[in-house]
Length: 538
Ligand code: NOJ
Image 1 (tube, rainbow, N blue to C red):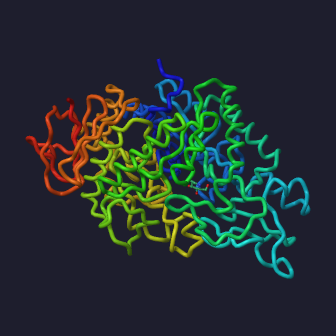
Image 2 (image 1 turned 90 degrees about the vertical axis):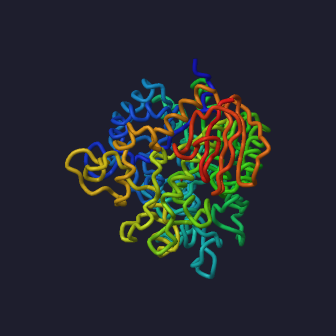
Image 3 (image 1 turned 135 degrees about the vertical axis):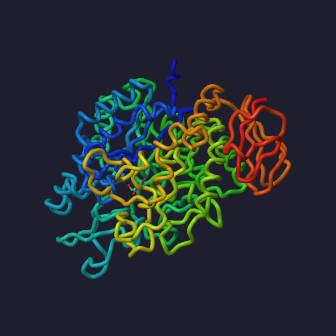
């Protein structure tokens, strides 16, 4: 029987619909493409899927600018396609969570159009954050806040008022103190819950409430590493929203969940997963740890300890659609560093070393208790497209900073399914160009050549996911062992001991039968090679 709180140990696979699989051959991934590949996902052995936004949207931030929260964008298909995908996932025993983007709508949303067509002070404007400007003629923005994507967080409209957008101009922030906004989103939740979704990933969960007087802020404005506490983030009142939502989910039983995207320090993140709020929050500290044993161990211990303070489990995540893939990050001279982007003019990662380390780190990740998030393509060992010509880039962060920042396109490249097909099999039929170019190296990573190869990265992920389930590692507990060297980690979860060698020199292995290894040649005899890992059965 599946435990109602299935998320506590679930492995959740992030689908970025634009780039997963294109069933209608227009160069853009779609929901029918996801349905086509459900057998692949079930065979991989994941428990749940999280889909990034597929709603109606002008796509100025790849769908994180929603124009209609209750419909599928024609780019991705129809509501019927969604229902088919959901039913197919459920038939195969996989849960499905969808992305909810409540901090802002698209500027094409009917509410924002109504706001623009209505006078200042009207109820239509009161759904958003409209303010008068400063300066003699209101010609200066109401405060000094900067958009996460660069430039001022305010845009002036024709009648002289300004509206707040913490992201792109096309993403006006809603006013979450307005009861109408709250009611609308509770109904959006019900709309998707009623269709049968198992939960929501909540975008910018720490951003919806702003300090009432909107004071200037001279601290860090962006969602920086470790988070920050400017007047636009992590205000206490935001928790009222999640308490309400918790009750909305409960109307549908005790097996629906929410996961918070909140870039904050762990002691603040856990406030979002108190028993009457959300069920999970992304653990970005793990993603941001460097290739260092003590740093990883600290993050692991702190994450488990802090989430257990509130009775929750933690989540382990290494990559998502907002940053350079870990196979590329781990091949940099500062392994694990998190550059905004890697372009042709930047240091190029050592691809082989990055892949080797990526295969080693997943052996640690999937041995940890709690829940894990995988980003599509990491099971293939995919690197970023690190030499993508700028003319292809579409990230609004890139466009708003004149190319200095915001290079998230490199991790959003369409997946390679068949090594020798056009667009590596991403598009079925007479394919248009994929919406972002794939690097030639993707041929080496294609699903068809990894599928039956026993030592491929895909086979490694499948094996680890099966063992994780068999040994119930997601519900286990860690015991650390004294390690022979600073760059070696040894930790047990029940019967499984992981040895991870982060250094380059081989290290002696303790007793135990090797039941999985990151590379066949890494664990010959009783030694483990550098940048490699094994699971031992004791
Ligand atoms: C976080 C999402 O993951 C990111 O892709 C998006 O640009 C921002 N939130 C704004 O919605």
